[in-house]
Image (cartoon, rainbow, N blue to C red; front, side, top):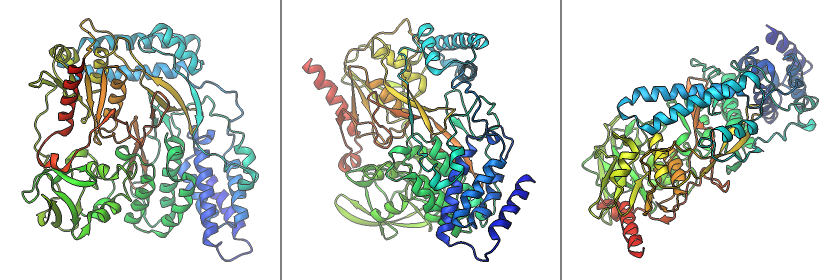
Length: 636
């Protein structure tokens, strides 16, 4: 009722003395100002943090008044609205940034997860898992006891205590650097008038219960958006809900996406660019199209996914080319196929008469390829299909079931026609094994495969080999790649910096040194012969983390193309129309604080796939790794 009365008064005031709406450019500027102010206030004001006010309802009620205001009126409307929200509580004494209560909750959540893991994999539990479980319990009890006497301590003190009492879990006191990534330069008097003085007072969210807030945080500090409404039955012709979707996506990326500062486009500019698109559309397809194009700007490759959408299927077609592809020598090449008309090693030249280059360019307008250099490789892995599982779907689709392709085979252009499938079964794959020994006494490990006895069993089976190849072109089991680190280094070595949201300041990050490491095992030894890590563009997310964790060992060499560059824990948030967007929420950086996102990890020795090698069925990366190990052992 308060919102309705307030906005009726605003509308009466703004309509007084004129019959026409302001020019469209003024409307767009007004709405962009509203989107920025609403997003900032939504994540900082006590009325929203406490859940007293519904942030969506406030925005939907404001949109008509702000849109139809004169340029000099929009800021006044927003000022009056801000005052109407009541006490912001920004002047309260600062409580805690990282309390022991939060630490206790985090460890309790981790123990619950660990317990579930122990129950799920009962027959595969190793001794190091049990040791880690015991240590997690000890840490939980330790921090819970501190919380009873000293509830409000800062992050640095917490880290120092952890390092003192649990040196294995806190092997190196973290280097903490507070660094802003949100541009708040728009909060100035020229742009916002009297409202600017109020917003500039913000200096952190005070100690309030945020369980009803727009964003909460899990035990690892990953932002969670469970309190946002989904509006599953929205009217796609309703400009208010369309703008709500745009503003929610834009503000979530602005304040909770760690890599906004390295994009090749200014994020603030995009808000104004997409407002006219949202206002012009009236259907689901136009709404989803704008969300896809906007989200593609974040260059988050494998992690940015829009679930519950129809756009890609309606735009590119329902019928899949039943093949798996890989990028080689600048081409999209058939790697595996379920259709006899296609052959391994075929180069795709055209799709239904459209040159592959043009087809790929259209697809890449809507999916977040990391950069132009890796765009084709990303298309081969991601494509225009439903996102899971990533490697079992085709990147080429058609509106017609009969699909005409032009391929180059053995140097000759060949036109072929095949039958597209709405869904096709998984490609036949050789069941991978956890480890094996090649005929030249070189061990190969696939860390994605669980085995009885775990990592100690694997490493003791390979202890007498002349070298080991670890294939990280597949997602590794988390415990496995942590456990195997102990067999390649005398002491745990730090390998990455992680950026996490600071929960008191949306848009800021803590940078902390990461050194994940499982407790010692009685059978651990250090393998001192050559170790090669294989990676390629399929090395995305957790495989990239594993590469970083293992490559710091002195005897490890990384081979292959560079990885895709999408690493760090993901989160999800809802958008109107029942859509869920996933994105990277924690940043990952090198030990030198260098960027990995979008760039990917660079190999020590670059090895590329070739069309000839693919056609012949060879694993060129594995072949080169074997040669490297044998040559290294001869030299030694």
